[in-house]
Image (cartoon, rainbow, N blue to C red; front, side, top):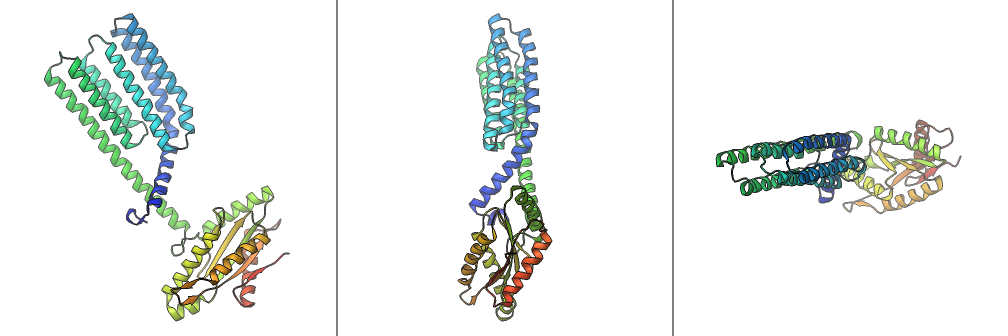
Length: 364
């Protein structure tokens, strides 16, 4: 499914899934960035103590750098526990903005700051902004704001700087933003496309193309997982074989397009009746399998009766009426997945032999 055919809800869901992967990756490395930034901040204090002459200014610099380093260390655990990439990115941006503000406060404490050295400082800050995991928009906004603030302050306060030097520094710093911004946006776009393609391939490998239900392989994975879970928790589990009655007759009389539409309609109807924890898989041409964890045989029969009645009310293009036959079995103490499939399949065929459009089950 491409971007043009995705609905707003699907785009939002895809965006959330993509950001969840970004959050997971960012949380694995954020502690490294925080520790490096904290240690570097203390190293910059050495420079402050060497070049700031006023004792009060030195004390202010030391206290501010100490507090900022401690905050960075304390925030590591909080960042690693966040559940939303949006909140994570906002927090990182605030911490970076605080670091830029610290840069300007200490810059003011210098009596005669060296313009070129301070320019290297703001360029370093910009590079850090583009390196730490964040949203591209946040990176650009903060780096551009820092750039404008620094060169505005320098133009007003550092009047002794030659115009040529000022312009050269401004151009080089701007180029850093342009290069980093272009690279960041391009990388993010590529990562999104790669994630979208990987998700599409994963979905294709686990979903039936026609009915958008699970494949046999996915069903087997879910069955083994849920059977193990239900056994540990002492919960029931049912497996259902479903057959769309007379699909061959529909194909022969009305064409395969009509038959495909019948399969899609029935699959969509059954999905509406199921919970998120249930699994519906296409087994063969006209057959589906339902996996119903934490559902007893009695409740499964009640559910299937609702499904059967809903299918009976369906008609494809106002012409074709439909019905389904069901075979349902409940997991026993020693039941295997293969045994449950075989039993449900046999019960489904019994339902078809007894007149179709029926539910067959065994309480043994």
